[in-house]
Image (tube, rainbow, N blue to C red; front, side, top):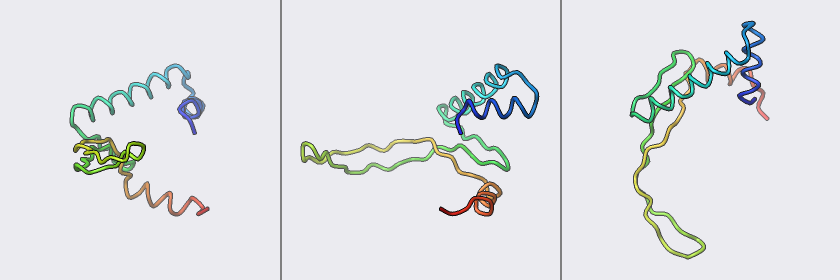
Amino acid sequence: MTKADIVANISDKLGMEKADVQATIETFMEEVKTSLESGDNVYLRGFGSFIIKTRAEKTGRNISKNTTIKIPAHNIPAFKPAKVFVEGVKTNVEVK
């Protein structure tokens, strides 16, 4: 499912214009990005949390040059689904 599919589905379910739904979704995503970039996590009860994970410094390899490089510690955005969300996927999605 793409963002366009989500916009179309929400527009159909709520009877709203696609442009209004698109603007709402874009604004939501921008707010999540802004919050994470400022160091704040975003908690959506019943859905999940957009959190900042810290990766420790580690040693990597540049295979083409056969050298060792240091990868500095850094933060990455992550999503942690709520238990209700996880259980819904477990019970409703067939294992492939």
